[in-house]
Amino acid sequence: MKKVRAATWAILSALIALAMLSGGVYGITGNYKPVSTPYVGVVVLFSDVARTNPIGYSSGILISPTVMLTAGHSTLGVVAVSVCFDKGPIDYSIQNGQIVYPSTEVIYNGIPITYPEYESSIVAGSNQGNHLFSSSDLGLIKLDTPVKEVTNFPTLPTAGFADTLSANTNLEVIGYGVQFQVTPRNNGVQNSWTGTLSQNSAQTQLISGNFAGSDRYLKLTTNPSQDKGGVAFGDSGGPVIYTTNGGSQNMVLAINAYVANSNCAGATYHTRIDTQQVLAWVTGFL
Image (cartoon, rainbow, N blue to C red; front, side, top):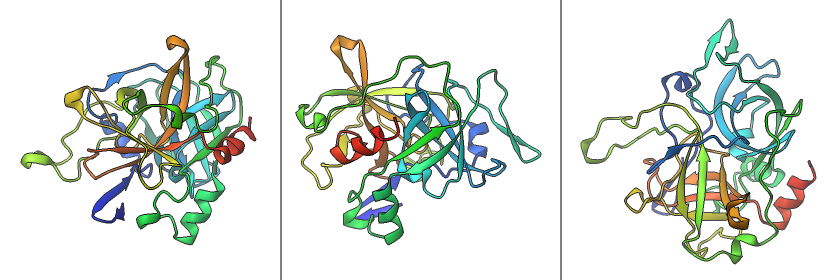
């Protein structure tokens, strides 16, 4: 977790014990609903090339048959990944040091790549405190083989596109995350948010971009009483989707990155894809 002034900022940690996968809990908060977005997948993270030591998981979005976007803190220090596009419920087990996935879904292997600016800022210790948004929390996965099940992909935004959107613009957040309630409200049960690890989504809205770091991040609302959902731990790398052309086309506007506190309540923050530097980096892999 990271501190910014008086507020507690929590990375949507991908380094959750893999055992959490078999226990299963919902990630998207608020008025979540199951979805079957074909290009959103769950990413299992490994610390070794042989993929025998799983260290957590994340979410990701496919933008071409061999390229996925995810969060930078999900790829940092990770050597290899495996990806599947099962909608859930998902139940992994570890047998003889290998991950066993009881499904007919194809599992794709890939190599994680961290956005260079983010990696260097973490190594230098500059991406913390008041400088939390000084670099874009972004990662990329190059898959070994093309994904055959997905034929339609979301579009990328043009540079500065988010700046043209008004406050309260409707957006959709998607992920496979885990709700881990560190400090229960109203004397509630510890870790009381339970359910099934599945692909879920929620509607949210854009907040005015007047905050430090708004040139690199979007700030979104999360208020279930107003039918606005949010993101939780493990939703890292999942997309923020903006629907264009009368609902016929989805655009990946941002990537899930930070939450405002350990209860996954309040505003959420998402790495913008529509900066010139990020777009240049991403399109260089396409």
